[in-house]
Image 1 (cartoon, rainbow, N blue to C red):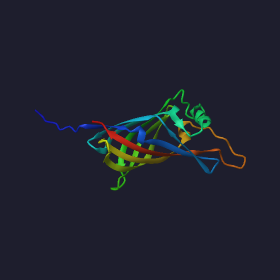
Image 2: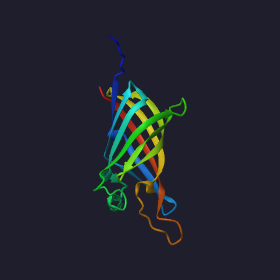
Image 3: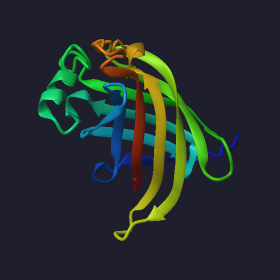
Length: 184
């Protein structure tokens, strides 16, 4: 009889009250417009507490976009941008998490799906460590940054400015602050 050692998978879920999935994009060539998504969930499974082994799936409700201006939010939900009625979810599935150095910096490689279009992206990850909150929950802390070209997902809407340049940059900077809660 052969014995096998199996590592128990640890389940982590995102703490939506202490996490943010945000972005910024240049508007009128120079200024930044910022926004975030208010509804999202993630399922993360690790071998023990080792996040390099993580199976990660993030789902974002595209209708939950919030830039602070409801008229702009409605335009972003329209077919000009996210086409949220037809594509209600933005999905990120991680393929790998690779250590860049020993100070908690990683690169996460994965597939981002928006508007039914799937593309590979890389994001920089800073691991803030494991910590127990005042209520006894074990948390893992992450800060995630990167940039994408929105046209790679069919978000092509734009207007050429009279003085030159375009209304909205093609580049979108992503910034996320994430707290994962260990499920027991």
